[in-house]
Image: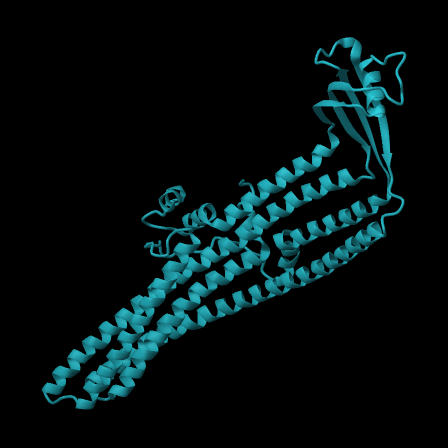
Length: 437
């Protein structure tokens, strides 16, 4: 079973770019498959609700025998064979075969069937919007996972370079120590720093493995899948400059809010459907059948009936009133949910824009800090090799340079992820795929 499932997955190319990662996740993610199955269920519910507007037609057959006077009389009459001298108190034994076709169609139900059909159609719209919501969140998660993996790979690279730098400096210092130009404490300090650098590299490699497994999982593949990403990817997204300008778009496009508002419409229809229980139900029904003491079913023994039936519950033990009250409170619940969802989207969008502004500012600061740290390490290294700076200052400068490099790269990827979060808050990542079934 596992092999069949893996064969059905969209494969991952040797070099994975961002757009390909998004397409693969949308094709393979099980949440999307679940959403599609729910949409198909909703389509079936619509067909089931629409069946109420069609007649029901069926055929039947019956065999009956006995000596009950009422049954004898009715069946003999329908057979057109009632004896003229029949004793109504003791008609005797009879046998009857009956076969026929019957049909019924509803003429009026207080709008219940119409409302149920509309509710089912709204349910399909909700499932489609739920799918857009899943896609919106999934695409944002894939982009985050993609940049997390790139950041983790950069951290491993920085940590490995740090190990190489400290190893080279340790070799130089050991040579100087043997020649009497360096202190034993300098060698020991570099040994400690080398151990720290190797520990940082191990942590970076572990983070890289976790980030790779997380992204492979989002793509619907085994967490052990190896991924080779295209570097220097960017989020191709243009968003409004300010939160105020973006808010109308978010309130119009976020699938979560549209789902709540469709459910609000459903609740109003459910309230109307509950009130319709106070109204009568009118059905037209007909039957065409044969009765025969044998199974000849000759045409002179055919029968038919056609009529209209009205059913009107005048008292139901207050059950209808209870259902109306329940539907009314369900409507109030959805009104509150609409207000809550609106506020949550506003807060989500506000936070996304604040995070984006912070990420842009951090990236500018960290770029400047990285340049300064590189220059500071170059100067301190020259001073240390010339004997005017001690090992502690050199180690501090080397550590500061590595931290600045990591912070700079993290700030860049955080900016891309913050832009992705703005796109998610606007509902952009779902609507780019809303034409797919």
